[in-house]
Length: 117
Image (tube, rainbow, N blue to C red; front, side):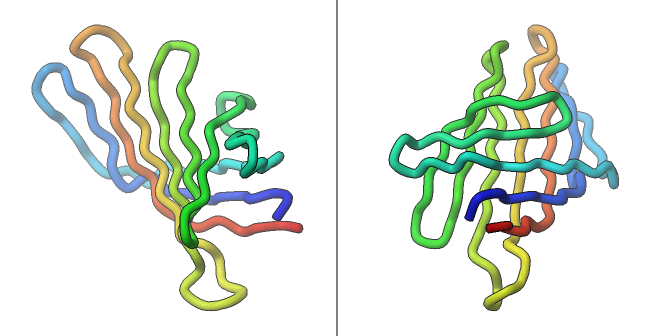
């Protein structure tokens, strides 16, 4: 696999400040993972905020991509084995973003990824 493109839809978006307020939205997000290097544990993520190098792990049919932003925020994308050969790979993307002290944006996206060789 050379490129993995994920089409994701927001399933949950919320804010902690310090109470919790959340809702569901249909916003979409496209993430592309390239330069997958299992030996080095790195990959390149291309998303709505540009490109960055992320941590890459592969465990028994699951791919994990972990990004720590320059501000220290974390995003995690998990991509799972397809339900049947040739079908898209189910995926979940979670964000934990500190906007200001006691003001945290959280979101979870779900969808599928398609590998390209």
